[in-house]
Image (tube, rainbow over all chains, first blue to last red):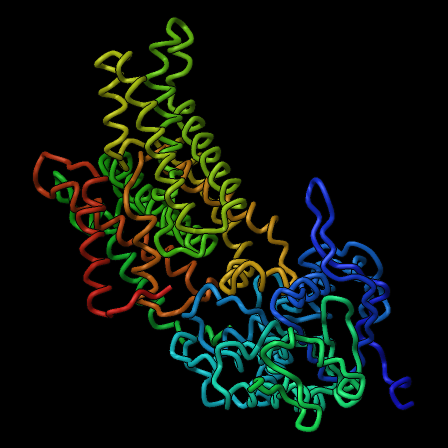
Length: 264
Length: 338
C-alpha cells in the first residue's frame, strides 16, 4: 500500500487517443487509465503500429486527445501554457537534432532555456544544474566535444542529460534504445533506472526491449489491440499480459525467464 | 552557453580589421585620399567634398549591406535548418526584384502622371520591401505544409523563375530607358545614397537588427529542431514570424537601396563559422555583423578599381571574391560546419 503515499505525476482518465480528420475520428486506443508515480521508471511496450507513439504524442501535447482527461501534477494538461509545460515535462525524441556543431555542454545548457532570460544567459544556478546533469549521466569526459564527434550511445546520454537539466518532474523518452547495440541498450535503461531513483523524477519511455524493461522498470504499460494495462512487471507476467502482445505464430512469451522465445 | 570570454580575442581582431577596412575603403578609389586627410575630415578640421558626400556614405552603406545580408542569411539558415539557405536562394531577392521591376518597368504600362509618381526612390524601396516580404511569406506558408527542406529550396528557386518570367514580360513592353534603369539597379550599387536616404535605410536596418537580437534565444533553441524547441517552451509561430520579418526588413531594404547583392547572405555565415567555430547565435550574430561588414568593404574597394576611372558592378565582385573564399575554406577544413 506504499504506492498510495507516493505523489501521482501523470494521470489519465478514460483517455481516448487517435486522429481526427475532416470526415471521421480514427480511434487508436480508448479507455486508457494510467497513474504514473513519482520516482518511478515506466516502460511502455507494444507491437509496431499499436499506438505507443500516438499515446506519447498525446501526453506531450503534440496532438490533441480525442476524449477523457489528462492530468500533470493534478492539473489538466490543456491548462498548461508552453513555458509551464516546458518546466514540468522534458522530452527525448527519436529525431536528430538540427545542428550537430553544438558542444555537449552547449546542448545540455539548452535544457535551461525555460528558465533563462530573453537572451538565454546562464546564471550560477543554471551552470551548477547543467554540471550536475552532466555528472549524473557520466558524460564529464565528453563535455567539450562536439555532437558530430559522438557515437549514438554517447549522444543518447547527452540528450538525457539535456532533459535532466530541464529539471522537470516528468521525463518522456521515445524509443531511447533504438539503433543502439545490446550493451548500450542495457546501459541506457539502467541509467534511466538510476536517475529515477536518485532524482525522484518520473521517467516514461517507450521501447521494444521488453526483456530489459521487465528487469528494470517499476511499472510497465502494455498496449495491445484490445486494451492498455499497467502494473508492475511481475504482476503483468502473472496476468499473462505479455502473452497477447504479438501474434503467437512466431514467438511466445516464456513466463519463467520473462523473455520471448522463437517457436521451433 | 559557453564562456563568452573565449571569443574575446577574435572579436578584438575583427573589430580592428573592420576599422582598417573602413579607412582603406574611404581612401581607395579613382582619387586616392591619404588616411591623414580622412581622419581630419572625420573630426571636422578639414572639409573634403569627396569624403563627406561620396566616400563616407558609401562606406557606411557597405557596412549596413554586408552585415545586414550576412545576418539575414544566418537567420534563414537556422530557421530552415539548411546550410544552403539565404535570402537569395529562398527567393527573397527575387521578390524584391519583381517589386522593383513592377515599379520601374510597369510604370511604362500604367503610364501618364502616375508613372512619375511611382518611380521615385521611395516607391522603389517600398516595392522591394513588399516584394521580398510577400515571397518570404509564401515560402513560409508552403514550408509549413511540406516538411522537406529541400522542397522549400526548390520552391524558392521556382519563385525566382516566376519572377524572371514576369520581368521578361514587363521588359518586352518597356522602353530602352526603363530597361537600362532596371538593369543598372540589378548590378547593385553602394554609392548612390544621400545622407537622408542612408538615414531611412539605417532606421529600417536597425529595426531588422533589433528583431534579430530579440530572436537570439529562439534561434539557439531552434538548433535542436522544432519539436525540441517547442518542448523547451518556445513559441514557434511567434519566433518564426519575428525571424521572417527581421529577414525581410533587412534583405528587403538592402535590395531596395543597393540592388540585389548576390552571394553575401549565403557566404558570410559560413565564413564566420569557419573563423569562429560555434553555433551559439549570441556569438555568431555579432561575428557575422563584423565579417559581413569587412567583406563588403573589401569587395567595394576592389569594385572601385583604385586609381582607375572605372567602377565594376558590386554584384559581380561579391560572387567573384566570395565563392572562392567559401570553396577554399571548405576544402581546407574538409567539413561543412552548421
